[in-house]
Image 1: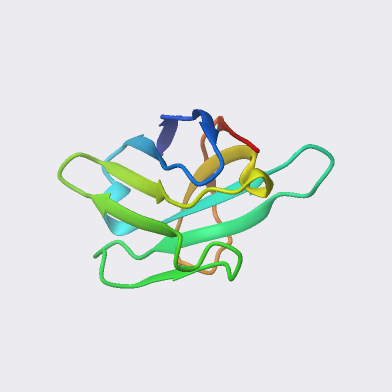
Image 2: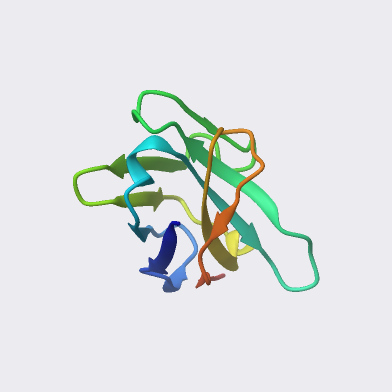
Length: 119
């Protein structure tokens, strides 16, 4: 069993930066892929970024590539999403998820954290 709790969301101006975190509990954290997803009002949830358990393999949605960085600290059971050059269209609830592979399906989800980017 893995439990995930996101934090670090908030309000930021366009062009600014924000880092969201996801704290995991459960012994299997280190052996799982972790992903970030987001859902904007009226839209379906979409993939943002994923990282393999070792941290040496990542991939990103084209919409965030070059602006967002996913990382993890297995000693702290935490995965991060550093978001730079934020745009109003990045406004969404951000969710972290854990799964056996980077490409899904993900079987554990957090409750989400709101990120709002003002223009």
